[in-house]
Image (cartoon, rainbow, N blue to C red; front, side, top):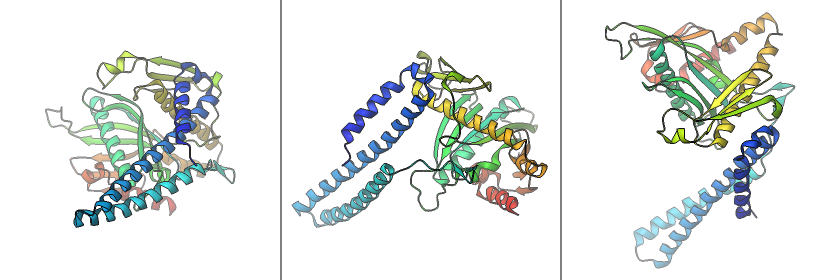
Length: 365
């Protein structure tokens, strides 16, 4: 039987340990504690939901006992059956969670990426404020697409501008723990073709003369590494804490909750300041670092392969212009497959499936 009180005490203990700034220097211990904390949170949340369902069942049974209102009694009987079904699903989810094993990181010596979580990085390029605004538009487009697929979303780091855009935003998409009909768990295979330079042509709101401006935004799609794919030595990390800035009022500036991690061997620097406590920002920054190190590792491996393979890999290069969004002509063009769509408004609202299907089909042909 699940001893939820013991799990809650363990969860509280882990939170205290993870709040210790010194723990970040022990990467293996920090990783172990973080994963255990996340696992316990899932169990505790599902147990809480199950308890609420059981309480509702008992409430409805109380209505059945009184037999005062036939209509209310009939409704109570229906709700009892519905809650019992939900309870069975939750119990099964908890059972699966307890029996869950770490997924295989490699298949026949090759890292498997389809279905994995991805870490996406959107960065404003040429075009000043307009590029920052379009970076925000792209983030909202991907966010709405993720919602339609049933994926979980989390912002890992962001740098806002006064006009409401982003100089940079880094976020994670991952498959939901349970998938409803019509939702897709295959995150990486859906997002992997979005990496590259996205160009926008439109009249900015700040443009008084009505001239069309051209701006660019770069997108990087990085598969989130599985356990054992990337090992980080504690002595290779330099960790700094500083006060967060941006939306959130004065609160974000009162404590040094923002985290900057420098990976000394590679020189890669990552930051996170979106959360209001150091622990969550540490976890986010380390997730970004792992993804960037995996990208660096794969790029080094790709340099050794044949010219044909290099040409295929070129689809995901950060510096390659892959798509143009022409607002005056209501047109979006993907330059890799030389195909255009004329429903830009719908696509920017997250209706990306036609483009993703076309890119996937072209790659398979």
